[in-house]
Image (cartoon, rainbow, N blue to C red):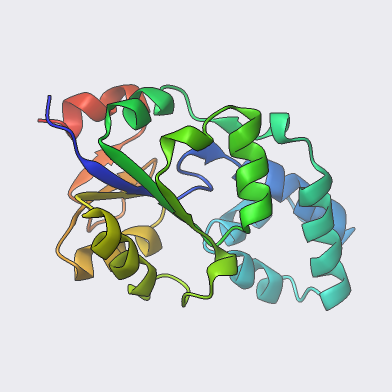
Length: 190
């Protein structure tokens, strides 16, 4: 089996975080909007959801505090993702999430050791789909494949001529598509 260097998104790609975020978002809004409606907006981006639901700075701060207080054990890694991480030569993360929450969750599951480097929203890079963070990680680690759950996650990799994989998303543009990580070896490692 060929080993590869993989750039990963975090939320919705490595960990199933969006259902928890939707629930906490709903608690912050104090309205009867459905978690499904919230989910559809936060899946685009938090900025999109904050704007769409016309959230105040106070509500945004309350939401972020709820995330920080939520037990790391509540955020679950997707099944079989560790097998893929273990098979790669190198794994790196590029996420808009903050480093504190990212590391807190990875450490809880003893998964931090899988990652050679992590670039977060705290590191000052422009937001995806700007390729600056991907260029940085590629220069340092020679990325072969980018895996994400949104088209936004693969656009920078495509700009660099890298292979891409969308997880639980069938939008056009990726080289590979997987709904479960136990499919990864049949679909990507071919």
